[in-house]
Image (tube, rainbow, N blue to C red; front, side, top):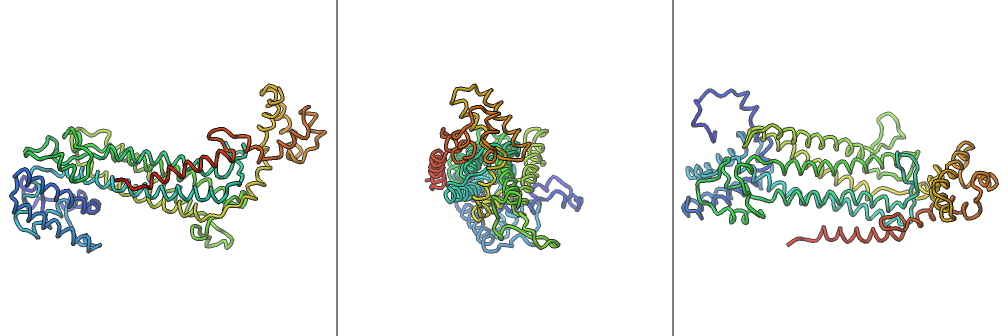
Length: 466
């Protein structure tokens, strides 16, 4: 069955081209959306008196029968063949209700139909992704609550920098993912408009109540330009960008935890449920869950790149190139959702070793800035304080000692003001974090405040919308 066969001579189809051009193997995933949109569209045709009440009842009954069949047969598509899901639905409908099925596509095109279904799919999957993000956000907060006093070496350039609270570190990823929440919600706003009634590109010749149709299908508004909306895939690219950013953030978290879980660091240990071993080396505990997340980030980024490249040279309006959008979209949805689920479970179940984190703060002179700040409080210009502390660090480094191990007499030769107070500042990461008591800082009071604010935001995200 072809929806466009009348123009073409029968028997002249190349079977290789038929296989090359089919999309049923991909877009069958939209079947319930196709049935839902067609059902609403049939009612709109009835309201416009294009279809009789009897025809509306027959078509609605047939579409509902197909929906029940699909829902009760998970493998419904096995052994089926069609050019696309729309063709399959129409053919199946004719088997259910007879020739009246041929009135189904009155005044509409596959162009506005698939654009509508893809937007419905996207809106639904954004809700699913937001739920998955919220699980990871809760896992981060749970670990922060469990380890309120754990101090972690902070790094820049992957070199020891300053002491921070472990909760402050976790809240940094909360903030990244919270921006992802905003991107997903923004994308849903722009995707929330109805293409149906745009026809192939010029609008329909039938007086459909598109506003009523939009309300029935759950869209916030009707698309303003039929030429644009049938070929618009901006919302797909925008969604893929949101997924790519989520995966980028997950990849950064994965990289951190891969490093922190090595024996050289030993800050965290993954649950056995999310690690694997070596077929050769019995001692290995490999962070494969994290490595796979890191690898899948590249996959989703590739889907975004392909999607943008797909659009860049297309003339208005619809072109068959747009058939290729769904494979990338579906894969990105699945990959991002699955990665979020696994990341949340990894974070929730990992063991933290605060003692090893604390021990690591003694290496790398993480309190050097605090010593310089203390000298500034005593009236020394910061540039001079920076110079003196830098020379002390070099001196200690050359002798293989820490601030805690250097003799006061030696330190005083480099920093004349060195004494009990400066030593106390130099050897206390706890004092270092307490001093950073500014909005957004790593001081315990600030992190507690940030944690409470994050919990409120998460509760608001999870609150059902009316």
